[in-house]
Amino acid sequence: MRSCRDITALVSQGLDMKLSLGERLAIGVHVMMCSRCRNFQSQTQFIRKAAHRYTEQLQQQLDKKS
Ligand SMILES: [Zn+2]
Image (cartoon, rainbow, N blue to C red; front, side):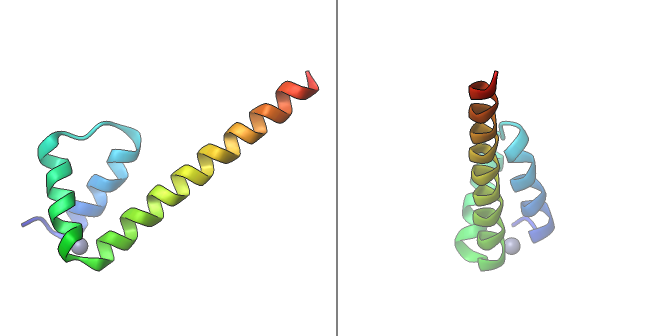
């Protein structure tokens, strides 16, 4: 069983790079039992999606101007 510190570190890493199957499994098992890490995971994914959308909108606006 990994600690919450390990899991949040893995979740953050997973935003930037691909995790191994073992790492993704460790996250999956942990968040099933730990609501704090589940919240952390959903928040980071939400922020990432929002940031992605924002970047796309910005790009579209820049495309229109040029
Ligand atoms: Zn946890």
